[in-house]
Image 1 (cartoon, helix red, strand yellow):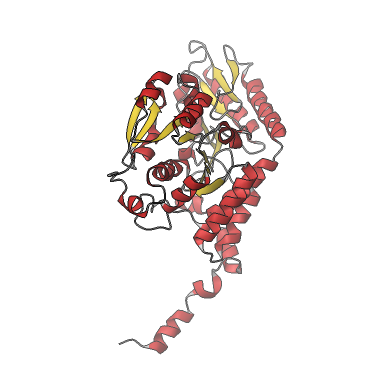
Image 2 (image 1 turned 90 degrees about the vertical axis):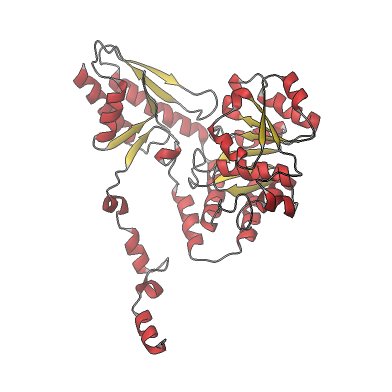
Length: 398
């Protein structure tokens, strides 16, 4: 039998009610715990870049504060999503915007929007595409792992290679045209021509530019070019929450995208939940990024590259090269190579020693023929540590 007196007595002893709410002394004390150390998880110096498996970027203090400011308040989620979207759209200069559960989520909800519009029956039906347009045109050279997020909507990809093939591929079942921005150099249909073809045939075009900030002007470049939808990762160059992203574009498509995801039930992206903390943090991340001195950032990255290059150049047979990717992650990196007959160690072994040493250091994943070091996600003072460690490892093998 339920005993109200005993229940209340037990309840009064639970510290959560009075002691662990955000803003309380107990909450502040709990925040000082080194949870990573407790769990045996080693943090590392990020000499790689904004790779998801390496937790991408670190949120600056103002973004963290925005997150915390929302943690102890209730809001109506759709009202907040709309308000945040309007502010981000005004900052970037597009019709509409929404915060998504990462750029891959934006691919799903954006594709769904192009298929369903605001039709509630279609929205409930996905990935059953009966009665809907369900073909997405993509260049063969633009197929990539993340197009799974598009296929999740039940679409069929129609692969093309030339403008002529694309024009023949357009038909009554064409729902969307997808462009993978990082692969622009290898496709025969370039980024601006692709947008123009979408306008010619009145087909929505979607540009996945997830890793393509910086430069800052990219945030508005592709919308101005004519793309109907564009996505960026929120947790890479923008330094927002790692699990957040941006979907920018036409107002009607953004409204349809919202209807295809959380908090709406029975939708293809119900599981793509974005919480209030992520929304506010993402807004502040955009505000902060647009205010940054990007030229100063670039000078700092070049300085870090030079520190590491200067440290290893004296080692016999070692050479260095500054490398800036053509599109995605378009920031200075340092390539380090050596003659294995002189410096008797493999790149893979250097990577292992950097990872397992103290402090742990991660470089660009997949480094095989040469060691590739990314500097833009390092914190101040870490370039010197990375330089010293790489010099020690190579010198010991020389």
